[in-house]
Amino acid sequence: MARFSLGSSDETGVRAAERHVRGQDGRERVGGNREAGRGFVGRVSKGAAHGGRHASNTRERAARTRRAQDLVCQFIEHLAELAIIAVDPRAAILSWNQGAERDTGFTAAEMIGEPMTRLYTPQDLANNAPARDLEQAMSVGHFETAAWRMRKDGSQYWARVVVTPLYEQDHALAGFGVVVQDLTTQRDMERQQYEHALQLSARDAARAEAERRANDLSDLVQQISAQATELDRRRIEADSANRTKSDFLAVMSHELLTPLNAIGGYASLLAMGLRGPLTPEQRGDVDRIRGSQLHLIGLINDLLNLSRIEAGHVPFSVDDVVVSDVVREVTDTMAPQVLARHLVEERVECTDGVVARADRAKVEQILLNLLSNAVKYTPPGGHLTWTCSAVGDRVRLTIRDTGRGIPADRLADIFEPFVQVGRGFARPDEGAGLGLAISRDLARAMGGDLTVESAPSVGSAFTLDLPRAR
Ligand code: ADP
Image (cartoon, rainbow, N blue to C red):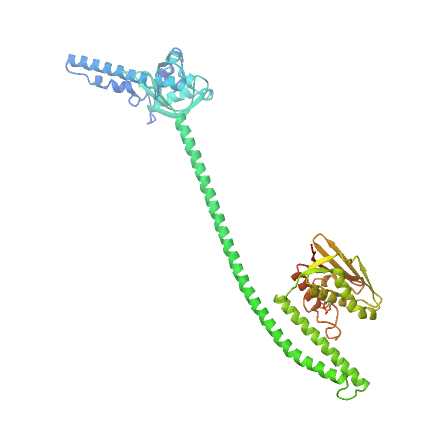
């Protein structure tokens, strides 16, 4: 490698370099790599090297060569697209073409005689880059790099720099040709292309993500539609099972009602003495037969009601219903039982102003069921309280008792069919656990609800909620 220092006074760095140039084969030799280093001057002067036998020919050739050199020099001088600079062996600028003026802003007058180092950035100068560039050029006959260069206004530009050592005919180092190509535009274009490519890849990624989500969504839609199909299948199955149950109940109840009515009819005949006088014991037996027969007919009617409501076969005749009227009617009906149990019954705020929008007969059926439960499950001497209210677009009617109450864990169950809490099923004066199920179904079918609050040994409060009449 040539050791090169810029501007050493008596013996130039380049001369020192000429004496210590190591070729690519690793051997050190004096004079550097001159063949590789031939620049445009060398090429232009090639014809002169051949010489001629004839003296006039030689003169002509020499003249042509000089002319060609002049032309090339002029061409380079005026070339504006590329900065071409010639420097002497100590890197002082010898020529400065229009391209160099255009790229750097320095004029030829400003730069001729100045050191080439003025084009280097402070950082490159600190790293001794100028000397290294020239040493490398001499060592291999050509040096090429991409680096930042300085403009007159202090700004920097990205450039491709090619340094070529130039030699005299006697092989002495004449200087360097430096070509500097401003890559700012190319760099901007590359950056734009890069950003464009980034945008494209971001767009592709977004599209891929959107496709993935669309696929997920379509999977989800498929799953949901499969579930909907399955639900539909089950609903059809359930409907069909329900129809079968209703048919069964209709047939069975008809089959049961006919003999039950016959039992009732014949028991009545006996009770009326049409088959002869009855002893008191016989009369008691006939009464029990009649009681059981009525109980069974009640059960069968409840079952029929329930299946009719569930199948949506119960007609509703909706009208304005004065709630206190229905309460009065129901309490009148149940008065004997209330009296028999020594219960105290009272009404709070059940004025005529509380009007529901409902089917009066169904409301009556519900209240009758609630009151008969309250009577059944409240010990003698207990209290029954009716409370009515109209709030917003709702009407509420509550019947509160001081009976045995219902455990909290059974509260939700009592509205299910056939659920009874803490009672034997077979007692003839008891129902089949259908009353509340039927009542809540009826309430809901009218746009209302039936709810309960209860505490064991304290009592229960059943609330019927209905739409309010306008
Ligand atoms: P049932 O014909 O058995 O009375 P219901 O559906 O009317 O059927 O009631 C279901 C169960 O709810 C009853 O068996 C009883 O355990 C409970 N129940 C209903 N009302 C009351 C009440 N006022 N107090 C205590 N328990 C009640």
